[in-house]
Amino acid sequence: MLKLQPTSCRTSGRSLAALVVAIGVVFAAAPVLAQSAEMGLPSIAKDRGLRSGDFLLRPSVGVTGHYDTNIFNSSSQEVLINPIRGAASVRIVPRLSLQNDLTGNTVFNFVAAGDARIYASGEQTIKNLNNFGGNAGLDVTFGQRKPIAFTLYDYFTRALRANNWETIQTLNRNMNDIGGRVEFHPGDTPERRPFNIALSGSYIIDRFEDYGGFNTNTIHTRLNGSWRFLPKTAAYLDATWDIRSFTDPLLTSRNLVFNSKPFRVRLGASGAITKRISFDLSAGWGMALLSSTTVTGFNSYLAGASFGFRPTDTTRLTLGYSHDMRDAYLGGFAEFHRFSFTGKQRFGSIIDVSLGFGAALLTYGAAQATAGVTVPSGASPVAGMPGYFRRNDVQLDGNLSAAFEVSRYVALSIGYNLRSVQTKFKLVTATGLLDAGEYTAHEMFATVTARY
Image: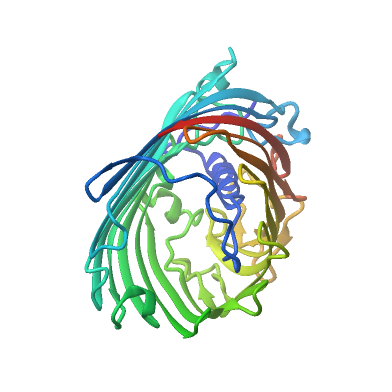
C-alpha cells in the first residue's frame, strides 16, 4: 500500500512528485460547467419560512443515505497497492438562510449549510473520513436601486474529500473568500437598466488539513459588464486576473508546482433566438502566466457555446461546449475542451427529473520527472525538453436525479452520480507502479429533507 507523508522539508523528491500528480489530478477532475443558455424551471416548492418584518428565515435539515463504489478513486491496475473499495455513509445536512426584501435598497443575504458524514465501516482508513464540513456565505449590498451599488461579502467552505489512496490523511481543505464589489448601473429601476458594470476584488485563503505544502493565497480580481440591447438579449464582457502563490516555497523551488497569474477575458452574447430556443456564445483569450522560466504556460483562445431548447413549458434541454484552462498542481494548469448535455422535466406539480452528462478532454502543462520517478507511461514527451511530459485525460461526469415535493414541510430526492477518468497515464518508479490515473466511481443516494 502506498504511504506518502504530508509535505515537509523532509519529504523525498519521489514522494513529492507522486503527491503532486495525485492531488493535481483529483482536483482537476471536478467538472467545469459551461454557462447555461436556458433558465431552469422555477421552483416547485411553495413560499415558506419564518417572516419577521423584512426578513425571511428558512431552516431545513436533510438526511442522506449515500453509497460510493470507489471512495479512493482507485484503478483495477492498483489491486496490490490501492484496491477498489466501496463505502456507505449517512450524511446530515442542516441548512439555514436569512434574507431581507431583495427588492429593497439595502440587501442582506446569509446562507449556511453543514455536512456531517458518518461512514458505516469498521476499517480505520474509511472511519477516518468521518468528519464535518459545510459552507457559509454572507453578502450585503448597499444602494442596489441606486446608480452605484457596493457589496461586501465573505464565503467560507470546508470541503471533505478522501485521498486517492488508502491512508489516514485526507484531502480535506478550508477555503475563505473575502472581498467586495462596486457596480455601476445607470437608469431608474433595476428592471429597466440596460447597462451594468461591476468591478470586484477578493483575497482567497486555501488550506489543506494534511498537506501544508499545497496551501495557497490568491488575490482575485474581476471586471464584468452587460448591455441589454434587445429586451431578451444582452452582450457581456467578463475579465479576471488572479495572483496565486504557494505559502511554502519547498515545492516551487523544486519546480513541482508554480505560482501563477492566470488572466482571462471573454466577450459574448446571451439571449433568446425564439420563444423556445436560447443561446450563449462567447470568445476570448487566456494566459496562465506561470512563474517558471522553463515551462510554458497556457496562452490560447477561450470559447464557449450553449444552446437551450424548451420543447414544452415543463421541459428544458441544454447543449454546451467550452474551451478554457484551470489551475492544476501538475504542470501549473490544465487545458480542456468540455462537452455537456443537461435536461430537466417536470411531471405534474410535485416531481422534477434532472439528467446531465459531461465529457472533457484535458491536457496538463509540462511537468518534470524528478529523482526516482521515470517519465510516466502513457504521457506525451515534450519536444526539446528531455525528462518533461504532459498528461492527457478524458474525464466523464454524469448525474440522474428526481426530486419530490411531498408537502410544504417535506421533500424527497433520489439520484445517481458518475465520475470517471480515462487515461493511459501511469506513475512508475524503479520499484513498480505508484499510481494509475484511470478510475471509475458510481454514487447512489436518497435524501429526505424537513423544512419550514
